[in-house]
Length: 265
Image (cartoon, rainbow, N blue to C red; front, side, top):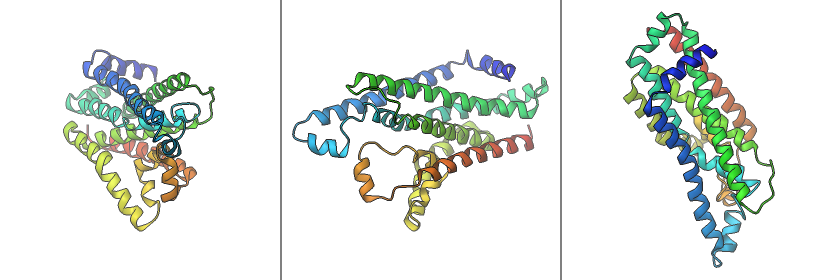
C-alpha cells in the first residue's frame, strides 16, 4: 500500500493545480468561519437585537461546546472543493493514459482503484483535521471553558467529507471526461439533490433527507436558527441518517470498484 501511495505522491508533489486548490480550500475553511464569527459577534453585541438574537442564534455558537457543531456546519459548505480536485486527478489519469501505464508496469486494477479510494479517505481526513483545528482555535479564543462535548460533529464532518469525495470519484470513473464530470458533479450537489429532496419531502415527511449526500449533510444541523427550525420542521432520526450515510459509502465503493474492474482501459 505504501508503494502505491508513494507513486501517487510522485504524481502530486509537482502538480501546481493540486497545491493551489488544496491551499485555497484550507484558507476558505478558516475564512468562512471567520466571516460567520465576525457577523454573529456583531449581531450579539447589538443591544436592541441582543435578546432576540440569543434566542435564535444562541449565546455563543463559536464557544465551547457549540463551536464543534458551528465550525463543522460552516466548513461543510466547502466539501464540494476536494471533490473537484478528485475529479480532476482521476480524469487526468484517463486523459493521459497513466492508469493504463500503471497497470502495464505491474499494478493490478484492484490496486489502482484502491489507491484512488485511499486518496479520497486521505483528503477527508485532512479536511477533518483542518476543521477540528479551526474549531479548537475559535473555541479557545472565546470565554468558554474547553470541553469535548459536541466533538461528535467533527466525526460527522468526516463522514460527510468522505461521502462527497467518493461521489466525485464515482462520477469520474463513470464519465471519465473531466469537463462533463465537473458539470454533473456541480449540478447534482448544488441543484438537483436539493430539488429531489424537496420533492420527496413534499410527499413523505423527511424522505428527502435520506438521499445519498443529503443523509450526511443532515447529520450536522444548522446551529443558527436551530431553535426556530425545531418549531417548524420535524426533527430527523439522526441514528438512521448515520447508518444511511455509512451504507451509501459502501455503495459508492462497490460501484466504483465494479465499474473500474469491468470497463475497458
